[in-house]
Length: 278
Image (cartoon, rainbow, N blue to C red; front, side, top):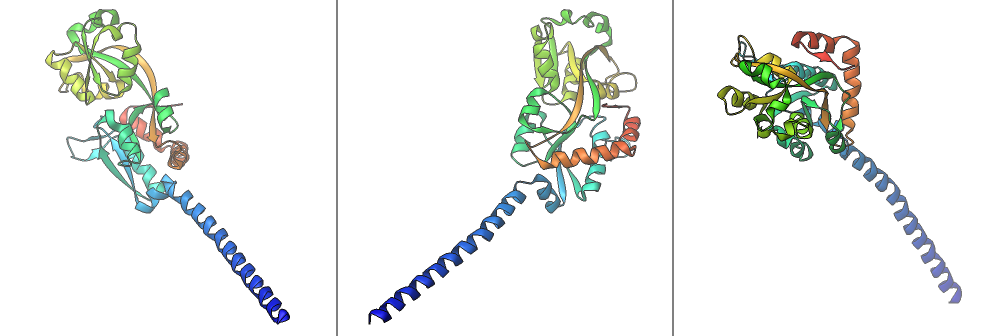
C-alpha cells in the first residue's frame, strides 16, 4: 500500500510539473505577441498605412494650401508636397481644415496625423511635438496701408496702435517679445486673411503676416491693392508637425530628402516663388 501510495504521489508531482511547465511555455509567446502588438499600436506610420490615408491639418494659406480661383482646384506648395509624399507612402492625402490656434489639440486628439501648412518652427512647438526637417525659408513682415508705409517702417510708431495677427501664430509670439510691438494693442484673429481685412477696413493700423502669403495677397491686382509691406520683422523656417516621438516624422524626413535630391521640391519652390531651407 505504501509503495502504491508513493507511486501515486510521484505521478501527481510529474503531472503538476508538466502542467506548470505548459503554462510557463504559453506565457512566453503570449507576452511576445503582446509586445509586438503594442509596438504596432504605437506606430503612427503603421496606422496611416493601414488606414490608407494621411489626415493633414491645414488652414487656407496662399501659396501653401488654397483653392485656385480660376480652376477651382485645391493646390499650393504644401498641397503638392504632401501629395508627393503620400504617393511614396502608398496612401491618399486627406486634407482637413482646422483653426490654427487649436492645431495641437487636433493633432493630439487624433483628428489629424500632421500639421502641414507653412508652420513656423519654434522652441515651444519643438517641445510639444515632433517636427520635420525645415523645408522652406520664411519671414514675418509688417503690412499696412501704402499711405502709412514710411511711418510704420519705424516700429516704435506702432506703440499704442492696433496691430492684427493670427492667434497661436509665430507672428503673435514674436510680437509679444518685441520691444516696440509688445506695447501695441495686439488683436488676434482666427485667420491671417482676417488680419488683412482689419487693416483694409481701418480697424487695425498694421498686421504681422507671413511674407510668403503677403506677397501673394497684397498689392496691385489683388483685393488688397492698397496694402503694402513696410518692414521685415522676423526670419524663420517651416516644418511639418507630428505627434511627439512619432515614427511618421522620421519616414517623412526620409521621403523629403529623396524629393530634394531628385529636384521635385526645388521645382515646386520655383513654381510657387518660395526659397527652400538649407
